[in-house]
Amino acid sequence: MGAIPRKISLLAYKFLGEGNEDMLKSLFSRRWILTTLIAIAAMGVLVRLGLWQLDRLEQRRAFNARVLSQTDQPVLDLSGERVPDDITKMEYRQIAVRGRYDHTHEVALRNQVWKDLPGIHLLTPLQIEGSEQFVLVDRGWIPLEDISPEKWGQYQELGVVEVRGVIRASQSSPDFGARVDPTPQPGESLTAWHLADIERIAEQMPYDLLPIYIQQAPGPAWVDLPYRSQPNLVLTEGPHLGYAVQWFTFALILGVGYPFYVRRESES
Figure 1: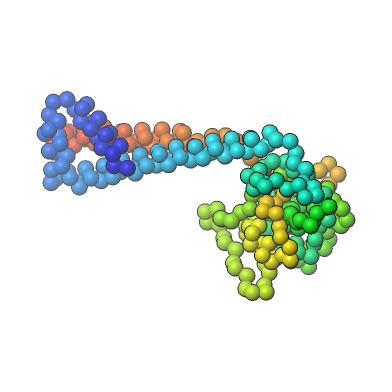
Figure 2: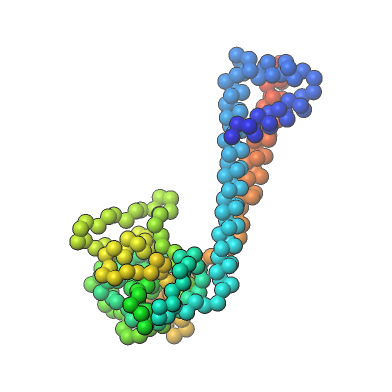
C-alpha cells in the first residue's frame, strides 16, 4: 500500500525543480515530519480506497456476466430424476417443475416487502413429480400479521401444481448489518428465518432438499396471495469506476499539493 503513495510523492518532487534536496529536508524536518507521515498515510488510504473500488468493479462485471450467461439459457425442466449436478451454479436461470407441496413443513422468510408493506415470504417444500426429491419454493409475499403458522392454511395450494420461476442460491451469509438466524435447540424447529439457508433449513426436514430454491414467478392466472415477484436485477457497472478515479485524484492532489504547501510555509 505504501509503494504507490511514495511514487506519487516522488512525482511531486520532480515538479519542484531545483531544490529537491532542501524540500526533502523540510518535509522530514522536526517541524514537518509528523504532518508528512500523516500525509503519506492519507495517500495510502486514498489509493487503497481506489483499489477497493476497482475490485468492486471487477466483482460487478463478473456478477453481470454470470447472470447473463444463465438468463440466456433455455428454461430448465426439473422433472423426474433429472437434476443437473451443477445446479448450484445456475442461479437466475429460468426453471419449471411440477409436483405437490408439503405444507406441513412450510417456513417463512422474514423482512420481505410488497409495495412498501412489511411481510414475509412462504418457503414451501415441493415434491418433484415422478421423484422422491424435494425442492424449496418461495411462493411469495403475505402480510406481516399472518406470520404465525396457524394462519398459513388459507394460502395452501393443494394437488399437483406447476411452478415457474428462477433458480436462487442458498443464502448462508447475511448482508452487512443483517441478523443471523439462531441455532435451533435439539428437537426444535424454526418457523421463520432471516436467510434462505437451504442446508440449515433441510436439517429440520424429514427429507433432503435440493441445494437451491425456486423463486416463483407471477402468472397471469394468479392474482391472490401469496404475491409472487422476481429478483430485481440491475446489470450495470455502477459508480465504482468513477469512485476509483475520484480516490486516485484525491491522492494525486495530496501528493502534489502537500510539498508545495510545505515549501510556501517554509519560505514565509
